[in-house]
Image 1 (tube, rainbow over the protein chains, first blue to last red):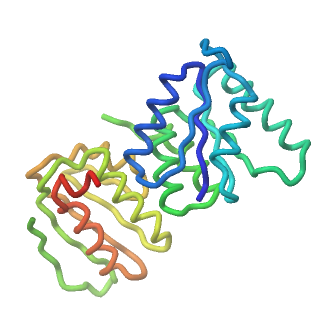
Image 2: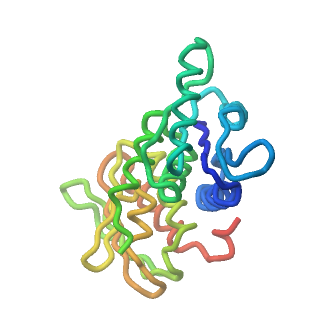
Image 3: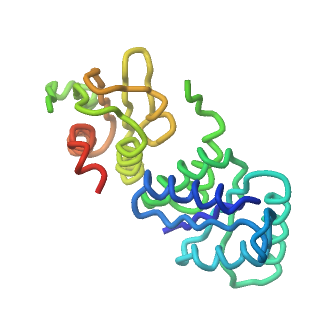
Amino acid sequence: MVGIVLISHSRHLADGAAELAGQIAGGARVVPAAGTEDGRLGTSTDRIAAAVALADTGDGVVLIPDLGSSVLSARALLDDLDAEPGGPRVALADAPFVEGAVAAAVAASGGLDLAAVAKAAEEARDVRKL
Amino acid sequence: MSASSDPRPATGVIQRVVVLPKHLHARPAGQVAQAAAGHQATTIDLVAGDRRANARSVLAVMALGAVSGSELRVVVTGPDAETVADQVVEILCRPEAESRQ
């Protein structure tokens, strides 16, 4: 199953979004990666790399960043992974954080592949809620 | 639970009409979308009043705003349409307590 990593500055935000997505999409593998090593607001490529390792079951991992340096950290990690052949397959999704997490989790738990799960996250942008 | 089934029309489209026993909120919407993801060759549309959602999109299904007691039309096109329609109707009509499991 494709794994999902939610990247945020805030542990509460990432933990809550992961909890919600996991509830709606039973069986999905959603791992939060947030905050700095010493528990402050911020992002850390080491924490994201650890979350990717936890989320990956061999089918790849979709990264969903919230904003700002979450995006930059995710990109930095992608560059690192590109430099290491044989590592996990990772896709960075340009998606709203909560809606993208929920859509990706449902797609992943339904058995879709990496590209389809990333697409599900990105399509969340176009769904109106009213 | 109430579901009425139409005889299969010549077009191969299966329709079911359900009176929802519960709101179609996040959790059942997720279950419907998971089921839809498992049938990629089949198109499942949910119709509530003048709104229509592809069941593959959990967000679109939630945005239908379909509430308990309202009528929902399930339109399935493609392989195994009948089986898929039955599966979706079962999810929609499953009692709330069971859908939490």
